Image (cartoon, rainbow, N blue to C red; front, top):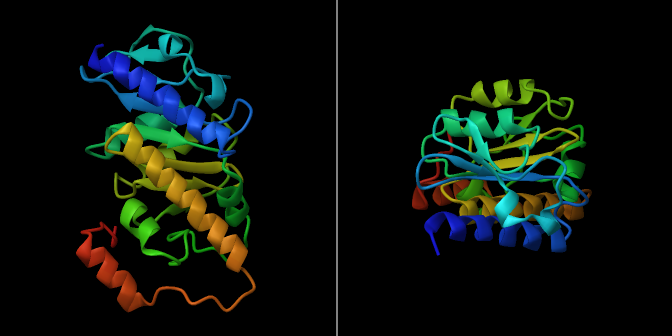
Length: 216
């Protein structure tokens, strides 16, 4: 089995796992990963995470030309923006996960630091998550907004839409976006309660110990 074949199967396996657990439904969400030769594998447009076919993933070469597979997701500008601006990006995942979308609707959410400091894990895996405004699905302006961050954020939340996370590889990106959704779910559960969040000193301790790029 070649390295690319393993990557194709891993993409489909992780996507199905997220679909089966309700993290994105229907034909929503998209996922991409860097191939060993510098190209990309991308989930095709209109496909379900629960039924991706490894042999039909959109295949781009290192120059960005589509060379095989089905037509890619309409959110390619969003994916390309992360690959072009954030060094070390090996995969990008976008979901329509329920609790993170619900949290983006709250009027008092901090747009520069979307997730409240409830646990150390979102801080460790995501850093600060930027809340971006609403865009029409497929609007290239989403990619422009990510480019405007100049590679300083590994994760953004598209208001009224869903999270997008870049990682060093496809497993890391999937783990991080699940942490984002879990933290948003906790935030919804704790809303209206006097929850004991991490103190600024505790946040600083996590950032320091795990070398998190926090001030970007």
